[in-house]
Length: 129
Image (cartoon, rainbow, N blue to C red; front, side, top):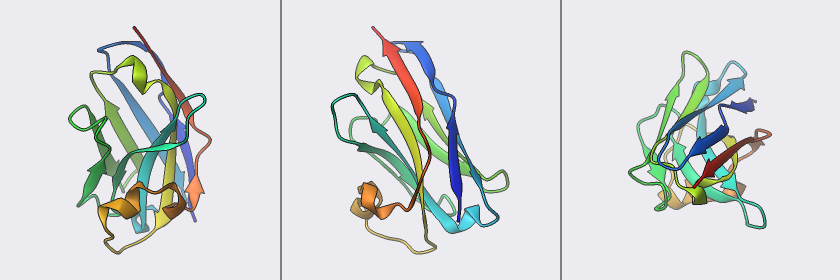
């Protein structure tokens, strides 16, 4: 199994950038598909982006498409989320999640929180206007 640990959150002005990292312990990181989710106060957890186990396919929520980029380095057991052109509505706690998979699923599968078995504790991202 893997244990995700997020880092890189913080306070940034609108229009700025942040890069989140997710370090995943365990020897078989490359056998896991990974995702980023976020949760704003008073709202449900929502999908942000996901990437397959070898990084061959990625998926994005419409709200972040063109601004955020998900990537992974399997040699470093690390997942990334590059966030550009940040908006105040991007303010949330961002979570890294994983599920064991070396199979392709439909895009909607990656967007469901219940598809994921392992979750980090989250990192706060605050975007000021």
